[in-house]
Structures are given as structure tokens and as C-alpha cells.
Amino acid sequence: MVQQTREQWSGSRGFVLAVAGSAIGLGNIWKFPYMAGANGGGAFVLVYLLCILAIGVPIMIAEILVGRRGQSNPVAAMRAAAEESGVSPVWRLIGGMGVLAGFLILSFYSVIAGWALDYTLRGLTGALSGLGAEEAQAQFGSLLDSPGLQIFWHTLFMLICFLIVARGVRGGIEWAVGWMMPLLFLLILVLVGYGAWIGAFAEGFTFLFRPDFSQLGPESVLMALGQAFFSLSLGMGAVMAYGSYLSPQESIGRNTVVVITTDTIVALLAGLMIFPIVFSIGLEPPAGPGLLFQTLPYVFGQMVAGSFFGFLFFLLVVFAALTSAISLLEPATAYLMARRGLSRLQAAGILAVIAWILGIFSALSFNLMSGFHPLGFIDALSGKTFFDLLDGVTSNIMLPLGGLGVALFVGWRMKRAAVAEEVRLGSYFGLWYFVLRFVSPVLVVLVLLYSVGVLRG
Ligand code: PFF
Image (cartoon, rainbow, N blue to C red; front, side, top):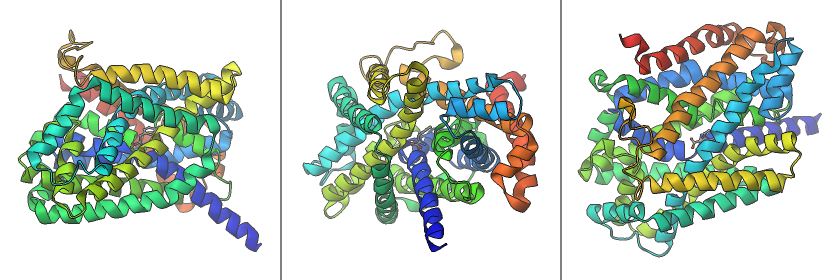
């Protein structure tokens, strides 16, 4: 009896750590602040939070449920759940799109993680100490301008990710997440505090939390939706894959709430860590993907032992990125192994090489190919680089569609009895089921239609 209780606890802990490791990553620390900056601040943040509540929470519960019910990789789990409820196995295509989306995201994710690797080294060599605002920005500019340096770090990150997935060392990941995430969290708190002291805290806070709806265009709403999916690792089967490891006794609802709350707090704190600095050093909030790397080095430059703190911070960011990247590569690897009978090493290797090649185009989007706009003939997409397009298509279209598919599948196609038996949400079941069937899908469809202009006349 005693032993059983302990096992259940450690099962839940392992699951929460794995899902939190996937969710918390560059999406929170790098992407959320610059998206908020580019989309006017408070109103974007508010829509983002609404998306998390009305779409993220119900869909995460649904994904975990399917994974646990189907006991397999996303594609096979969708098929198994479909068969059990006597509906078409075509629903597995949703799992298939997710596998592809994760793989595409990995390609550019690795490039940005490469930037963090570069900054880890700078911290180690002392290059982050005593930097002024302009020097910090110039340093980042020189990294962006260098295809060689970016490709080098991208290669290294992809290689590490490949090695971990190829060896399947899940235990090590949980262990690492277990102490590194709390440390990262603590360090972010310190940086928020320090930033509040040396920066323009009131201005940053207002920007982030006072909604100004005149700043919120249709694309911004779509981006908030995409960011919610991206940050929670939803819509591509990563959470579904982890769901298959959750023991039947565990509460899906409670675990979901823990992960989503943590993820959201980390994103908001990252915003609070960055915007007071943005305003105090005269940067513009819509500065783009470089925002994190243009602001924090300045903070480290002012701190006692700043290089050491910079080293520690970027190292932890690299680890947060790694635990997310693994969950991006793992579903595609599991799928390729099952489908083509490849070994884990072969499957992960083939995928990592293709993602690496794609990633090179993302790295070049910031320099040699910055003038190359693949879909420039479409008005709304003129000026978008290869990186912008890949990021936009995956986060803002593929993930929401994947999530929509899961919501429709669980809400409308799976047998209600099977769903209820698996989630066991108690008195919350009715509310969750209603939101999953009616609210989340309708909202996703409305946002997609609104952003392409169908609903705007
Ligand atoms: N959620 C991760 C982040 O916020 O950095 C990125 C990510 C991981 C997206 C896994 C999607 C995914 F399936």
C-alpha cells in the first residue's frame, strides 16, 4: 500500500516534469516577449491568456486523454482511439500533421537555441561583463550577421538533440528538468528584480498589462492563438506522446493545471524581465526575434559577476530549449521507426539531418537571405523571410489546426462514455466537455477565418 502511493507520486512527478520540460522553452523566454512587443503589448497578452484558458486547457486535457487511451505514438494513438469508438481511422492524419509540424519547428528552434549557446560561451569567457546598451546590441548584430557562427551553433545543438533522442535517455531528462527548471525560475525572478531596479519598471509593466485594443490587429489575434499552442506544445502530438506514459490513476485535470500555470507564469515573468530594460535603453518593443539577446546582456553588463550570471542564465535557457527540442524530434522519430522499421538511431539521424538542412535556411534568413521573400507575391506576406514563414505556418496554422482536430475528435467522434471514463474530471466534466465541443473549436475557426480576412469583409 505504502509503496503504491509512492509509485503513483513519482509517476505523476515524472509526467509533470516531462510535459513542463516540453512546454517551457524558448517559446516562453524568447518568443513570448518579442511577440508581445511586436503586437502592441497588453491587448495581445490578454488575448493570449484567453486563448490559454478557453483553448489551451481543454485541448491539453484532450491530448493527454487520447495519448493515455491509445497507449502509443500520436498517429497510432489517434487510430486506436478512433477504432475503439468505431469511427474512421482517417483521424490519424491529424497525428501525421502534428509530426510534420514538430519536425519543421525543430529546424528553426535549433537555430535560436544556437544563439543561446553562443551567449553561454560569451558568459564563460567574460565577454558579457561591463557591456553598455549599444555594445550589447552591436554584439547581437554581429552574431546575426555571421552565417558561419549561427550554423556552427545550430549544428552543435542539433547534434546534442539527436544524441539524446537516439539514445532514448528519458530518465536523465526528467532528472535534469527537476532541478534546472526551478533554478531557471529563480534566476528569472532575480533578473526581474534587478531589471526593476535598473530599468523602467512602471513603463514595462504598463506596456505588458494595460490592454490598448487599438494596437490589436487581426494578425495579432492569430499570433496570440499560435503562441498559446506553441508555448504549451499543443497541436502536434508531443503532449499526446507523454500522455501515454501517465498512469491510469493519475488526474489528468490536476496535472494539466499545474503545467499550464507554470508555463504561463514563466512567460509573463520573462516579459517582466525584458520590457523594463527595453524602455530604459531606448529599444523599440517591436524589435523582433533579437529582443531577448539585445536586452539581457546589458543587464548582465551592469550586474556584479554579470558574466557568471549570464553564463548560468543562458546555459539554463539552452537546457530548457533542449527538453523542448527533444519533444519536437521524438514524435517524428517514433513514427518513422514504427512506419519504416528503422532503428531509433537511423530514424533520429535521418530526421535530424533534414531538420539541420532546413535550419540552415532559417539561419541565413537573418543575413545572406534576409532579402529573400519566398511568398513575396502575396501582399500580406511580402517582407517575410524563410524563417518568418516557417514559424508563422507552423505556429499559427498547423498547430491550431492540429488542436482543432483533436478537439473535434474527442468532443464529437469518441464515445462520450470512453471519454468520461478516461478523464474522470468529476464535477468539472460537464464544463470541460462543453468547452471542448463548442467553445474551443469555434474560437479556433473564428480566429483563423478572421485573420485571413473572411470575417472582415
Ligand atoms: N513549447 C515549446 C516552447 O515554448 O519553447 C516549444 C514546443 C515544443 C512547441 C514542443 C511544440 C512542441 F510540440
